[in-house]
Amino acid sequence: MTETTGTAGLVRDYLETVWNQGRTEEADRFLAADLVQHNPNLPDGRAPLVDFVESLRKQLPELRFDIRRVAAQDDLVFVHSLCTQNAEDRGTAVVDVFRVADGLIVEHWDAKESVPETTASGHPIV
Image (tube, rainbow, N blue to C red; front, side, top):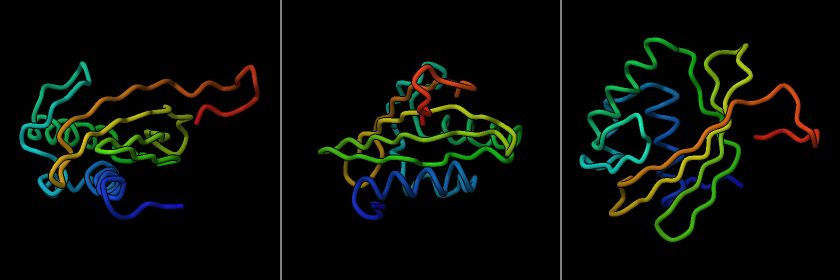
């Protein structure tokens, strides 16, 4: 079931609009100006994230997050997705955690792992 409303819908729309479509001018609809960032490579704030997305999409214009699972609990939204750089890329499994307050994403954590060719169990990681 696809969640298109509430906090989960906000996060889905954010990933599709800002990341997949590269429409960073829409970031203020989704992100607090003082976004707290737990990714070790990004400083806090909406502006640094917008700069990062714009730079990354210039380097990797086919970059895409294919959302596989979304779960929400209270003010947190968890997204499990496959991030690919292009059609030939096996990809990276990504788990993002977003905290939402007053209709905006105010905090973000993420963890990622390269998708292996095979797994011991035979099950995909995404």
